[in-house]
Amino acid sequence: MLITATLIAGTALNASAGPYTWDGGHDALGASEPEGSAYFAEGTTRNGFEEYLILRNPGAKAAAVTIYYLFGAGAPTRQAMHLEPYAGASVCVNDAVGPDKDVSISIVADPGILAERQLYFNYKGVWTGGSSAAGVFEPEQSWYFAEGTTRSGFQEWLCLQNPTVRPTTASLTYMLGDGRTIDKSADLPANSRVTLDVNKEVGAGQDVSVKVTAPEGIIAERPMYFDYKKAWRGGHTATGASAPAPEWHFAEGTTRKGFEEWLCIMNPGNEDTTASVQYLFDGGPMTKEYALKAHSRTTLFVNQEVGPEKDVSINVTSPGEVLCERPMYFCYHGAWEGGHDVVGSTAGAKTWYFPTASTGTGFESWLCVANIGSTTNSVDVEIHGDGGDHESAHVDMAPSSRSTFDLNALTARVRNSWIKVTGTSDIIAERPTYFAYTPRGLDEPFKIATWAGTDIYSPIRYADLIGPEFHEAALDGSNCPPMQPYGTCIVNENAGRMAPGITTSDGNDPDYFIESTRSRGTFATTACDVHAKAGSTVYAPVNGTVVLAGPYMLYNAYPDFKVLIAIDGHPGYVMECLHMSKLLVSAGQRTEAGKTQIGIVRDLVPYFNSGPNPYTREEGNHSHIQINVAH
View 1 (cartoon, one colour):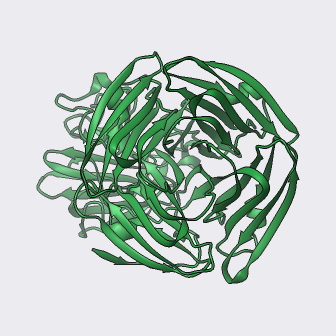
View 2: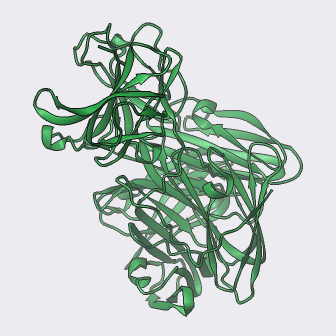
View 3: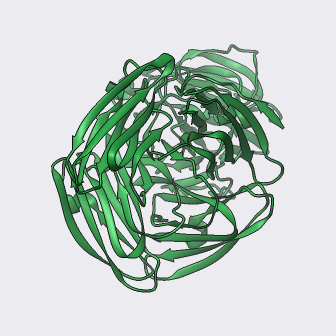
């Protein structure tokens, strides 16, 4: 199948306005030169994910580009495009391949280009964030990951891409924090993508590094989603390293307020060794030595190692061969929470490229440059854009030092900007980005529960979802039958009031909560508050006919609107929908589950002066649904 590409001059993400943004951050290591191929193992267009492929031709000759989208099996989908000199393209993968696809990407270009994949998400309707990755230039027979954990609040995955026309088998060695190893294997069909649930592979509560090998060259990437210390939710991804090395370098890093930085050093060898870690600041370096046990991972808390309020780059050297990753978790400016992670670079380069500056409304990007050498380095930052737009910055960097550039300031007068960084000697360059991303709403209706053979769809679309929270209804149990939640229960604080036959093991998406008892005498899942920002659209949860749409007094004290829908196939039962500031339906109107708009979420905070909800950690606005016996 051939998809005709839609080219744009730059990389801005044109999202429609909405009441809920997905905040977070991501970080990308630059590319030292354009390449004729690029591979991405991770990628998905499932509900709650919006994926972009960002391409740039940094040369003076037009480039012919072919993109191959690989799925679980079958022939890949092909997309062809032509990139004029210095032009860029931003491809929405959701548009290119359609919804509900797990997808890897292979790119062929002549001459070479720059390629980056940005993924923004509302993971299972609870954890928002984003990730970015530069393309891998070629398949390898081995991949290593130093970081990884299945501790409480962490969900780890491995995405394996086989871009060849031959099937192969991947062998995996999971190296646990206690020194044990677990060996597994995975069959990879030709031209395919396979996803492994590491939490299931090794069990809960493990710190885990991974080695992946295959007789045919493959690509391996590790996405992780997290509730870090039950404070900062988000996700990050990293493409593995193809081999251990005696040195590793990181340009980004900070211990400022709201940031927690870690350095993971994996020693996959049979012998103990050591690592010398040089921490680079604006004013010079500091060096510490660490012992590394064989077949183990050493994790350093950089905040503790260097102290607070430091912007820090890192050089790691070892007499053995090791692997290094740097995860960071943050609440940026006290507002945008998340995390990002990169595998270090094993060598510096005099030139680094980024296909986008990743700036614009709701985005704050920085360029971090490390002078890893022992001499002064003259560094130039060039910002290029459409129509010859150009800005530049220069700094003379002291030996073993770090500099940071504000990309939003540098790109303010440049349209669709991209970056070239050069030094007189080797440097490392990274681009951390923090954002409040406005989703386009590329989602499909989805169910959150079932009852008596009927699927109950979410009254809030996935893009706006903050989490379903089941609880006891206010009416007596004979009037309010319990619903069977659909998805993954991440908190159940009312197990003693679960109705007979109702489980927490039906489906895996979205995540949901069951709140503690309200002492109402009804079962734990007889009502559901589907959390969303005030102003979000409310959709009909069921197929049926509106029998009432009008005002009432919530708790006989607060003005509110309700909608009652007679449920198709269940005479005598209605779906009750509450907490709307505006109605979009009237009595007698037919509704289609997940598609018919029935109202707008009311702002309940002025009524209750409520603080953050203990489950969603948001202000508590929601669409309330329950099933009642009709009167």
